[in-house]
Amino acid sequence: METKERNILNVRDLQVQVRSKEGLFTLVKDINFGIEKGKILGLVGESGSGKTVTSMSILQLHDRKKVDIKGSITLNGQELNGLDNKEMRKIRGKDIAFIMQNPMNAFTPVFTIGYQFVETIRSHTSLKKKQAKELAIDVMQSVNLPEPDKLLKYYPFQLSGGMLQRVMIAMAAVLHPSVIIADEPTTALDLHNQLLVLRLLDEIRNKYETSILLISHDLGVISEMADEVIVMKTGRIVETANVYQLFDNPQHEYTKRLLNTRPTLNLEQQTITHML
Ligand SMILES: Nc1ncnc2c1ncn2[C@@H]1O[C@H](COP(=O)(O)OP(=O)(O)OP(=O)(O)O)[C@@H](O)[C@H]1O
Ligand SMILES: [Mg+2]
Image (tube, rainbow, N blue to C red; front, side, top):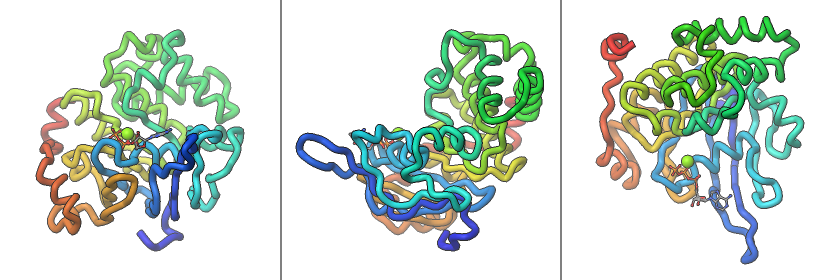
């Protein structure tokens, strides 16, 4: 993790503070990590530990008037912290994509999936509508979404949460971003869809060598998916370790406690293939 050059995404001395009448209040502090190409970094911690604050900082999605971000966030060597909205809009979706917990929030209800997919592609490329649609269909096919042509004609409310989440992941992957940040991508889903979504993320990582920051409070998910893991507690990182080390030999009391309350998730290939 310390070999800076190999890391696609590097976060150094990140500190996020919110301004209030009483002064500055620190949400996260001393956050340091990096993700290598094609690796999955798990970020775990109980509710309120600062996982989403951290991911929103990387994406520069905090309200600048209220939230102060210190430190360095580099993506392929480019500093993101402090870039203006216009610059960030060019980067988000193309170089770094975001998958949210609730897929409904990511789509506009009044437009079809196809319209939104095509517009996402067109906002970052010079493709014509028809070409963008072809590309959308290609990527949906490559991630095993059934009947992409038909799916594109639907409105968001016509799809199940699991299906919508998979479309969102296809949208996140379509421009082959270097990094995908997935913030609790499976929390709102039933077990069957959780498995499909996790398998899909793994396929994308394998196919495009995408680096993934996978945020979850579910250690079962992290143990199956991540290469390295960071554990957050009250806005700080308390432990960083290789996934095997973390689960076999946790160092921090907090990690031990998290591990003891872990639900298990069987992600064996056979199970998933059977469910597809
Ligand atoms: N804009 C903000 N202004 C003030 N406080 C905030 C703001 N955003 C987040 N917080 C606070 O920062 C802390 C960390 O929140 P965050 O959403 O990052 O937690 P989380 O680890 O993602 O939790 P969860 O697992 O529930 O999603 C919480 O106490 C939250 O209330
Ligand atoms: Mg969160």
